[in-house]
Amino acid sequence: MSKTFFIDKANHSGGGPEIFGARLKDSLSDMGYEYINPYYDHRRPKNNLSIIYGQNIQGSKNFLRLDGLYLDSNDKRTDEKNLPIFHSYENFDHIIFQSEFSKKIYEAFTGSKKDNTIIHNGVTDEFFNAEEIPIYLSKDIKHYCVASASWRRHKRLEEIIEAFRDKRLKNVGLLVLGGLNYSPAHENKPNNVILLDRLSHEDSALIYKNSNAMIHLCWLDSCPNSVAESLAAGTPVLCSHNGGTKELVKDDGVVIQIEEDYEFGTRVPLYDPPKVDTNIIVEGVLEVLEKGSIEERDDLRISNVAQKYANVFV
Image 1 (cartoon, one colour):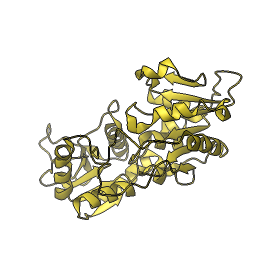
Image 2 (image 1 turned 90 degrees about the horizontal axis):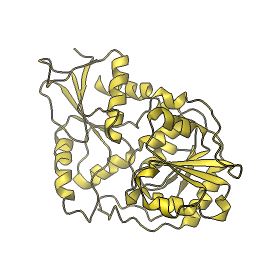
Image 3 (image 1 turned 135 degrees about the horizontal axis):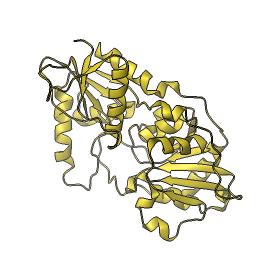
Image 4 (image 1 turned 60 degrees about the vertical axis):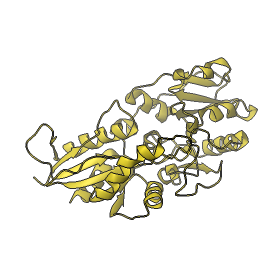
């Protein structure tokens, strides 16, 4: 009975939280834990893990895994969206935060501190074991960077693409995963920027493995899966100083300051982020390219992350 569990959000084809939930579910199962869905099984799991928000299960130990909050000051429904999250935060037995940044956000907004553990996201072995296949798009391109994000404004893909117009990056290519979903980028993009469709995890792993650097400048991101995937593939990351991304990157990349420090406990116009000096991005790209490949980040392997969850369960 003690090695049974339930995760309420687990979908390999879903968004970031659901993808992580699916990876964790598979890894815990590989460790000998039995997955019990209480909605279809008369039994109750010993350990109930809800992602973002959820329901306590009577007779189970109830854990809540949290990343960020809805922070957009321009959204009139922000408070409404946060209500079920705050309710879960107050009522679950133990909180598992994605990052120290996430923890500070919740403590600032709620004014309360809960029994908690910080565990970063983990990724599957395909990102560690991807084959080395040199990328070649043009004889003029000597290095390749990759960016992976949706086209919402706080992801700052527009600014990243604009930076690649700089002549200092004329021999550096940028591969944008998911870039085909944003039509304005097709109209006037630099020649060294390549827009790709959404890829499978296997193909994404190949891109990460064979790129020289990843760029992730999202404003106030908590713990992005894509950054963990890049680090697992041995590729250094350029990231901004606000948010939890730098906690993942550590010394395996370059952290740049492109806006003022975030004041915890405040809402921000999330989809109208501060303007970025593209010169800072260019200098950051040049610096991260000098790092070369990094050592394998075994701490981000999903089996090791799942073991941390198992330790919390017991």
